[in-house]
Amino acid sequence: MRQTPQREAILKVLQTADRPLTVEEIWARMEKRRSGIPTVYRNLERFVGEGWAESILGQDQIMRFVLCRSAHHHHHLSCETCGKMVEVDACGIETSLAGMEALSGYRITRHQLHLFGICPSCRAAIEG
Ligand SMILES: [Zn+2]
Ligand SMILES: [Zn+2]
Ligand SMILES: [Zn+2]
Image 1 (cartoon, rainbow, N blue to C red):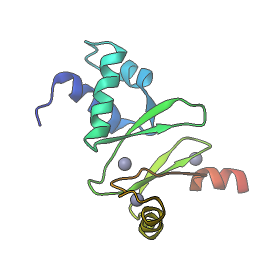
Image 2: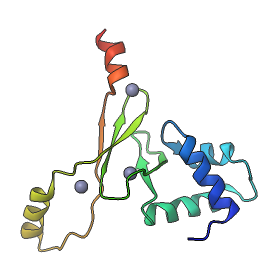
Image 3: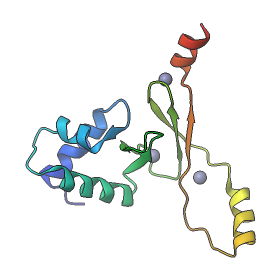
């Protein structure tokens, strides 16, 4: 895929981020800021559609974006204390999905599942 300098700049920010970032945070960290926040947002939505990134709606109702490292189906696990996020390679809900299809009559084509918890370093700090 052809990368515009704008898309490259967004990807670079996501690649070096240690946690999911809001559009404003991404925009503020971009080197080549030739367009406004709405354009950055549109590009991010496109990344999500292409499977390069994932959008996460936080408990604060603010949307944040994170880069997906694995190309195949996976889920995300976020720390509710520090915001650190990891990818979990297993899905494990295929059986439930088949049950939901049977119940609803829908053919389920995709799903998003975001898990929340407390990461090992925050657990160590809390539990001592
Ligand atoms: Zn992902
Ligand atoms: Zn944490
Ligand atoms: Zn899954």
